[in-house]
Image (cartoon, rainbow, N blue to C red):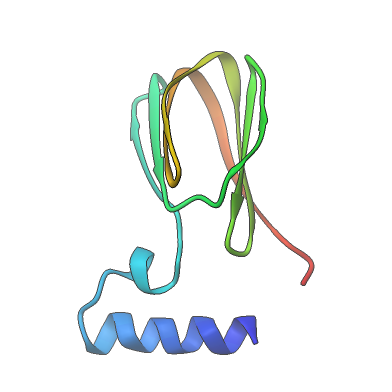
Amino acid sequence: MKKWHQRIGNWLSQNLELPSDVVLELPRITTIGQLHAYIENHRGLLLFTDNELRLNMEYGYLKITGKNFVLRMMLPEEILLEGTISEIVFIESDD
């Protein structure tokens, strides 16, 4: 089912010129160097410490590691993270 959803989403994005992050329910991550990360389209906060952030995504989760993390803003589907970011990793679920 997941692959079918992705194929349809890719087709819609390419042929109807719709934004792929919206059609495929993907996160949009905007970074400013290693200092800020603005993440949209997440499905909830799983873990937050001063050196790690994990966000639930449609097809797994997003893990951001670094140091001195502070959440500057948190809305239902948006987060602004501040600190020194060293790594951003997408981890797919086994479904």
